[in-house]
Image (cartoon, rainbow, N blue to C red; front, side, top):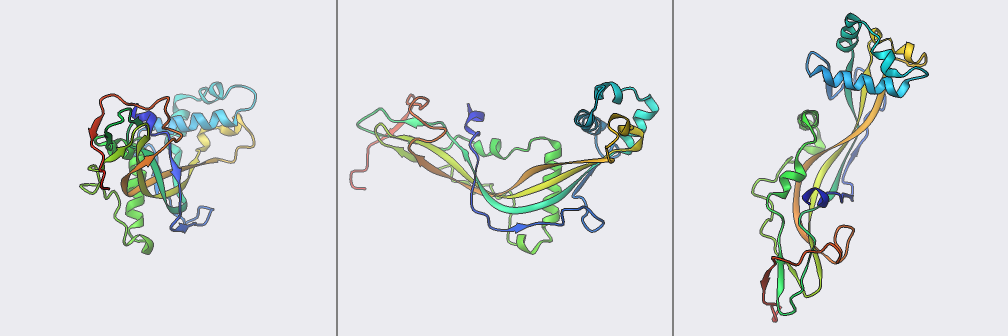
Length: 253
């Protein structure tokens, strides 16, 4: 159920924007380079197969790509690489669901809703080892940027308000949200395909490289807050009411 809670992701105000030159050059150095000398060759192989699928004309790319001899395939894979270039940097907020959707069916008491224990670890986890390395390289790279001098990335240890208590009135809806400040980095991943791959035989118009765009997020800090009422992830159909904790309403509040 926790994974379902994380579907909602809202982007709000920008606090900075940096756009490097859109064309890679000697000055525009890659933030990460992947080759068989530094990474598992399966990353390169899968990437090459995907490109072959996309550029295929006529005979299936699988047939053409896999007709290479073992020596040609080795030269193809070892001679190809993937380079990631920064295309845009901006600071923004993302919002995630941090608890179940809850309603209160007790007319005498308010129910108490708090953030799901350690939910931030699930929200902040990296997609895979490549995502982890990209983030590490980016944080190191940004340490020299004037705009980021005051930034402290991943500033979550002992700083999250897990003691937040959202009080749910009778028949009301409530859900805890997690507002996360991040540096959003848009990247261009360019695969440079070795001549040994013979992709010109798959498609004569192939120019030797293929670029795709991806986005990664560098967490800065975050906070939990109470979101009252109906939303995309909270309505009466799915709202929980069992196993609630209660307190008497503060009649003086």
